[in-house]
Amino acid sequence: QVQLTESGGGLVPAGGSLRLSCKFSGSNFRSYTLGWFRQAPGSEREFVACIKGSSSSTYYGDSVKGRFTMSRNNAQNTAYLQMDSLKAEDTAVYFCAADCQLITSSLRYASQYDYWGQGTQVTVSS
Image (cartoon, rainbow, N blue to C red; front, top):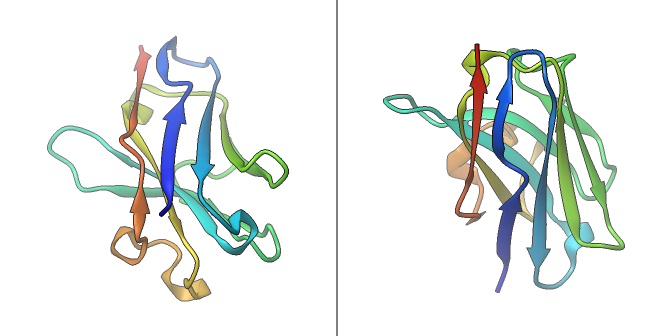
C-alpha cells in the first residue's frame, strides 16, 4: 500500500520561496511517477508538476513554468517541489500524487493518479 505525506507548506510573502516535500511509503518508489497538484477554494484541482520514475523527466504547468522545480531522491523515497518567485495566485492546498502506470499523455490529469496525500497549505501574501 502506498502512502504519501506532504510537508513544507506555510505562509510566505510574494516573491519568496518554499520547498515542499512528499515522502513516499511503499515499495518500488522508482517505478512511480510523482505529481504535484494544487487546489484553491472554489477551483478545480490544477496540475503543477510531475516527475517520471523511469527517466526523471519533468513536466510543468504553464502557470509555474520557470518558477517551480520538481526533483526526486530515490534513495530517500522523497519528491520535492522548489517554489520560487511565489505569487499570491499560487495560494492553494498542494497535493502530492503517485501512480506507476501513467503514460506521458496522462501525466497532467488528476484522475489518472491512484494515490494521494492529504495536502499542505501554501499561502502567499501580497
